[in-house]
Each structure stands twice: as structure tokens, then as C-alpha cells.
Length: 171
Image 1 (cartoon, rainbow, N blue to C red):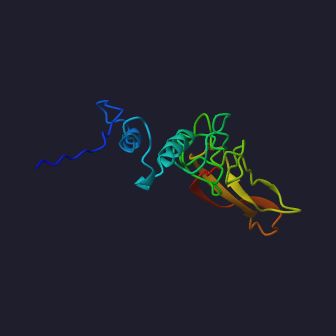
Image 2: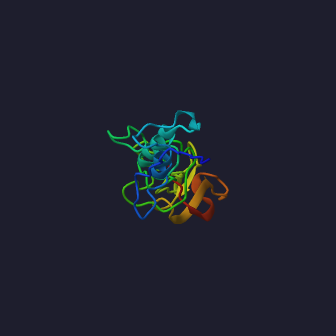
């Protein structure tokens, strides 16, 4: 008496030497000869395809889609995870084109400290404030001053009350 066993023929459709990027290999493994998906496998093959599309629209994987018609997102630099519409704090990284410090992707560079501040003058109305004496770029250092009344007996003049080296933050 002879017994015979038969098995479905499973076809792997991508025989490339690089392995087919994972997604194709899994999708191929779930196919039987003739192209019908295995319904009871418990794996949603579309999940992998959606993931691949999502990665194409979020290259830096910061959770924000790229700007443009293809992806429809608000991420102004999808190659740098530090730049996205969710940035709410100033960053002290050096910044060049295309962002120049617009880390929050709102179309303008907002610096942490005022620039080109001068503390010299009369203090009849007010004498205060702080900022850089020059205009350092985002991530650049400069002298940060705090203005105050000079102790010249009359208190009529403003001057530098304190100063320190600081890094300009931007968003």
C-alpha cells in the first residue's frame, strides 16, 4: 500500500539577490500559485505597502509628512528630523539654507534674543531690556547684554548692567 501527499506550490515572485526589500518577500510568501492570497494567514499585506508609502513622505521619520502635492504635509525639510511644524522651543543648532533657522516650518525665522541692542542713552522713560549687541546667526555666539540705569548719582543714563556670551536660538 502506497500513500501520497500533496502540498500547494508556494511561489516566491521576487528572486532578486537583495531579498526584495522585506515587504515583497512577505507578500510573495503569502501567495499561492495562481496569485490568490492566503486568507487565513492573519497578516494584512496592505499594512506593509502603506508603511512604505508613509516612509516616502516622511524620510526623516519625525512624524510629519513632506511639503508638496505628492505628500501634502507641512514638514519644510524632510531630511532633518529637527525641522517640523511641531517644534515649539528655540534650537541652538547652526542653520543654513534652505531653513536658515526656521525649525518650526512657519515661514519665518524667530530668534530667541533681540539683536543690535544698544544700552547707551538717557533713561528718562525707561532703561531695560536685553539682547545681542550684534546679530549672530542661528546657533552662533555673541555678547548678550542686559541694560540698566548707571549708578552715576542721578540715574539718568542707561548702560550695560550685565553681559555674557550666549548662543542665539531660533525656531
